[in-house]
Amino acid sequence: MRWTVHAEHALHDTPWVRLRSLDVEQPDGTRADYHVVRLRDVAVTAAVDADRRVLMMWRHRFVTDTWAWELPMGLVEDGEDPATAAARELEEETGWRPRSLRELVYAEPAAGITDARHFVFRTDDAVRAGEPTERNESDRREWVPLDRVRGMISRREIVSSATLVALMALLLDPAPAEGGPAAD
Image (cartoon, rainbow, N blue to C red; front, side, top):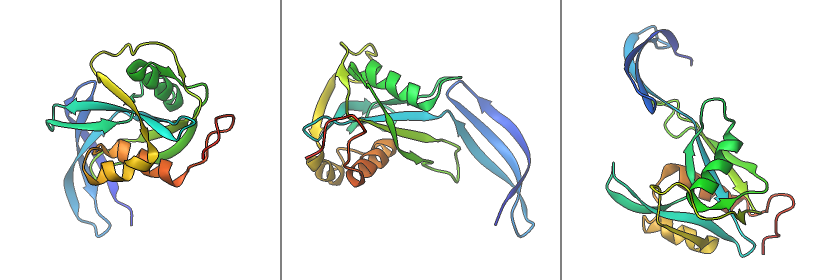
């Protein structure tokens, strides 16, 4: 069953978020005012090493006032493709540069209220490029063994939906990217 959008009006616009009011018609013919949050695309990178560890960052999210482990991620800039954004964010936030990336999973985290799209990539051949250039993301980065991830999720040490989706896909897809080191 498809809903029809008759009109869309801006309620609030910033470079980060756009709140819209949509005049929609539901399949039964009912018309309603529906609010939608329009967001920029997000690119995420799961960097895995030869010891089956994933590179994660311990960070504070002030909006929810929580500390948790996350994968490197960030917004896809105008004119930038998601893979380029994923590589850029990995290097800016961790100091590690992927030699190759492959798409791991694509997700729409809350399709009923937002048009957010998350593009998740995997690299098995990241190399140390230097210190992170993004100083406001995290001051602690660690290579976390994949066999610890399930317990970390259970203990709510990993709560970001983009990170959760990425790690769950990673656990279902243990094969390294072509040319990367073999998994145990």
